[in-house]
Length: 327
View 1 (tube, rainbow, N blue to C red):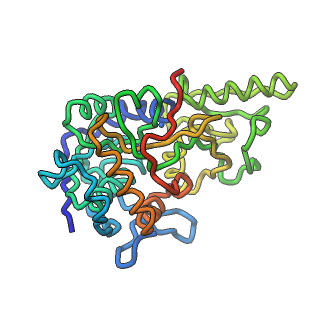
View 2 (view 1 turned 90 degrees about the horizontal axis):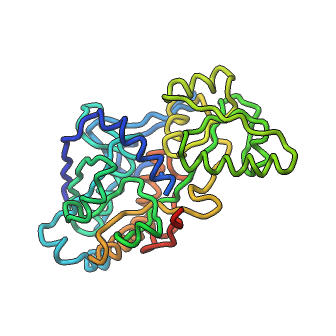
């Protein structure tokens, strides 16, 4: 079995800056048999996530057909250098030792490398730095919640691995049970990030509602997550609207909020999160083949379930899928 190298070197302070990257990314961002479960549900419905450096990851096998597609320039050292940004659980975050990256993107990077017969070399990277790193050849792939856009496709190749979803969350005992259309947010007090794609979507929904004579949305903005959560729990706000992955993690971790609606990150268009590689180097084809091997053998589903992201699973990895148009 291929080994995995995890490099530290990016401080925990990175989280504050790269959380913005998550929003920008959404804008353009059970375990296998024989493996100890990293997340277990308690009697209270709270899911325990393993954030320690010691990770019992899903064991995967090499797919010879996918491995044969790896370009010689990448396979010659036997390693796959993958950049991740440890900014937010459950995507990628520093473990309890404050130096080891863990999370969904790390698990997928390790599994992808193993499916291709390579050793994963995980490198913590500030989200804003990955484009230059890929272009210069420092990173052979990026798994960091990168949304496919037509503008990015001019410079990078992609292999999709997750749906880009935004989530509406309410207090666990809230009377609000679903948000599926614009009418469902009419008159609601909604917390949203200023300047984000989710704010843009909510503004369009609000205009649609007002044109129909429905009550307007009350937009609420907070400087930090703790203030936002306090507003929800105290009843001063009805909903939060933001990247689903991080909200799902919080809801599973403390059972204080519940998912009431999912929206495509590129609404009304579908948005794809993808492994990102240098344009024209041929690795995206190998990456898609490796990911499809993981999907077919069930490893992919187990990894996403491990981190509470099953709602964002794809049924097939595609090379350079349709990207969001330039705004």
